[in-house]
Image (cartoon, rainbow, N blue to C red; front, side, top):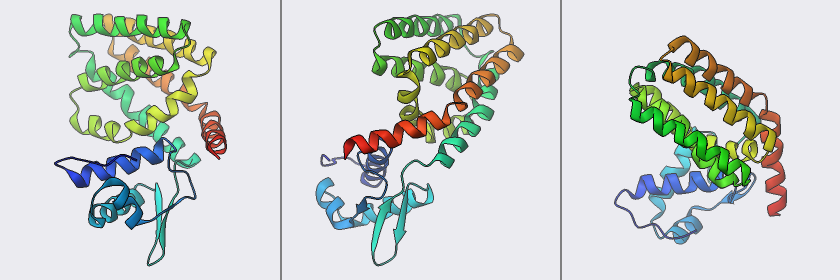
Length: 225
């Protein structure tokens, strides 16, 4: 891990360790020693301790007082809960986005769908995940529902880690692109009910593959060993 140079050391330390866990660079069961993390990141032990306590509240680590801290990582339950939250909040945000998306915004969304088709043809999973992510975020941000945006942003790093598993499967990537195109057409028609319905179906479809995502994550950990 590279050393952190930032004005907001506390937040940077928290975000850094969180991403390392979600990217599985820090694996479930791995012990985290405050002094070692502080040395690696070039900070004092105080922001490390605060970050670990915040991560425990999020369920990503378990702290055993006066002993050590251990990585819990992404559990099957957390995958299910995140998909449940997304399936309720994102369709609502999409409904509210209908009146706020300009014609230029809709053209941008169309360009993202086109890019995702090209990325899929080239089997460029990295680009596919990036474009897919931008499609969802553009719509959510256009809702102007700040609290919902904040909740979804808080889960963003989880969602990105799940998307790799999903987009790596050609048939699922194709299905996702087709569903994005249908959502886009409903947005262009300014049909709130249809947008919300299609967004809900899209996210429920993703949730059907929770077991696949979890198995992929476990396989990735074993491959690191």
